[in-house]
Length: 332
Ligand SMILES: [Zn+2]
Image 1 (cartoon, rainbow, N blue to C red):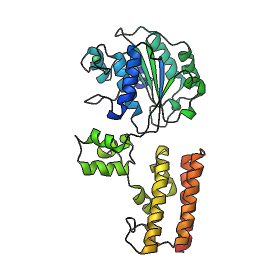
Image 2 (image 1 turned 180 degrees about the vertical axis):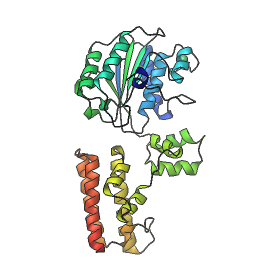
Image 3 (image 1 turned 90 degrees about the vertical axis):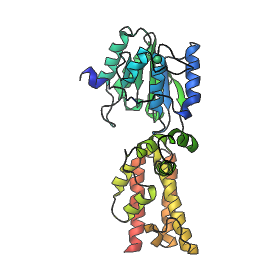
Image 4 (image 1 turned 135 degrees about the vertical axis):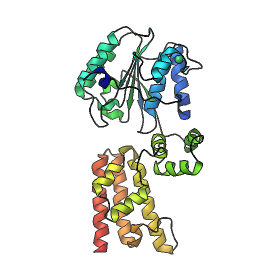
């Protein structure tokens, strides 16, 4: 594997800046850096699609910038220009070649070799690893050795969706920063210059408030269906349990289960008082209250199991099969 493949170029954007909801974290870390108390290893933890990797890359540029302004990279110096072109020699950006592939020990060994060299631009060296939980055991152990005796002026920025899947000894060597889903208004403010309000609202709904997902949806990057239409397609036999489960990211499963419960409540309500509820075109509306309550109990039980760390993909598949059995029994 050549170094070009190994150290993928950095995803650059026309305008590089921290996301508005990351301002406090950015200020906190840049102040620590200015006061020379920034640890050499940091781990950014939180659900997928909250733009943690974007944060890590912005902060990497700040660490490499030769003349930062107010705690952010200047975007003008030679280092910033190289960062924005994805070709800064002292920035190692480590990510799997394909989304679900593991990061192997060879990659970490190459990182080590690169970091032992003097910084080519004379400043810091930065290594961003995202998602860090995709390092296999050997890779993680190799990284741990580097973190135990880090090269001078070198910073490691790890990004993780699931901190529990990372060696505790690695976590203990990093300062941890948690990231959460930002308030919807902040996402709206961020996107309102580029997209119409009704489009943003739709994408927020479909993307369940995850900013990265919302952004992809607005850019046509995902062929996403709303939870309700996905469930309707499933009960109508147009989707299988596996294909639905593939559509739902594990970080989004709790929200999906909530949508499912809401859909059942709507169906129950429309059956009871005869009103035209929002979801009355749902295939579930034709079920009697008895089946709807049975399905409700299954979904509620799945929520409990999820909180107890059940495997999200398997949990959703088995839930859907259970619900479909109740549904088809009624229709047979
Ligand atoms: Zn700069």
